[in-house]
Length: 581
Image (cartoon, rainbow, N blue to C red):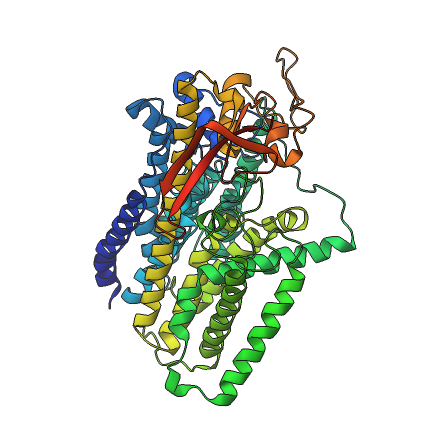
């Protein structure tokens, strides 16, 4: 297929992918009046910006939030001061991201079948679907990073010097502006753009332009960071956040391995595509695969055991866990959320995921090329891809290393790496195994999508049930600050009443009187406090919402709020509890 034909077909393919992803998100009806994950803080900042035109932080955001705040405020202005318009704003970004990502895949050398597969693998993943139902910055970050990536590919394929200059400038601008909301996007200007300039170094004026753009980018980024540092109630987060010693290397190894395995899980349909037919397997091959699977899974268990997930699927968490994979007591809500996956199921799934990944990777490694592109474009050659994606990975992984040493690398941090992994693996599959994605891989992708949509639906239904319980208590005259309704609700209550979350890293203005210590009853065990109790001292609960009846509390006269899910166990309920008397 010639490049003009590819562009024409890709335009409609990309739009169709965007439509499929948007419809998948809409199936979950992601419009509810409650924060999700950390966006309870960002929502308040967007509301204030819509009223005043100023950025006002509230002691929770460790990032400046940037362009996403006025973008969300635009939807608030159009539809009113509710939470759901902000969730709608992210849905629009998700729809815009898919055609752009598809175009990147086509320009990077994937044929029509593989480009559609790579796009949907990202858009229907168990990370992208839930995040695009929130006001978190991850979806917008992927969009702007993809826009930078697209601009660099266009520069590499441009025939005139003027066009090269224009696309380099646009790509750099997309990265610098996009990074104001999600700082990891700055790798586009800092490492990807120089990599593209290196490939274009023989073009007249490119080196001088690239140096100028890089200097301007660094100056702009430094100015943004300085501005954010001086904003009242912003949360400073230094690069070095703790003691560094020999144990740090163990933490780094375990966290990075857990992230790699989680990324492998998210990209599993690609590995399924590479698995040879059953007729090609031998007894010796099965034995080697079994031994390798056991060895890798057991070793990863011991290396990553220090994380919350204790070395088993999903290995690292935050978003995927919400979909019925894993929960821990008194985390997001008191009790433990009913899970689709038992501990045994997680162990079995770990072995299956590792085994499929090893089988697919070995097949790609051993296969010989069956296709050679007659006249590849500059942007689609392997040489270009290695250098350009190498620039992205060096910058991205480099910025994740401090997080991996002192904190957990969350699964949502892997979202920008998913299309990179899909591109490389599918390009190898296309050239070595077949020009079309096998049916079994499409079936696996469909299962992944169904899990993402159904799991997100159940996660949102749990929040709707919480809101119903809060409304029931409110009808009886009980104010929100006397209700422990979980992480996000308590955070929104604290900000609404006190103006700020309490964080020891934040310096409060002298004129701002902030209660910094929670006053929970002395006879109440900490297991009944909740995850965010130290940061929400304004919340002094008399009633508690929980997934189950917990030992330190007893049922109240307000009963339970039942709700139904799409994944087992289907019938669930939120308990309205009170202190034991």
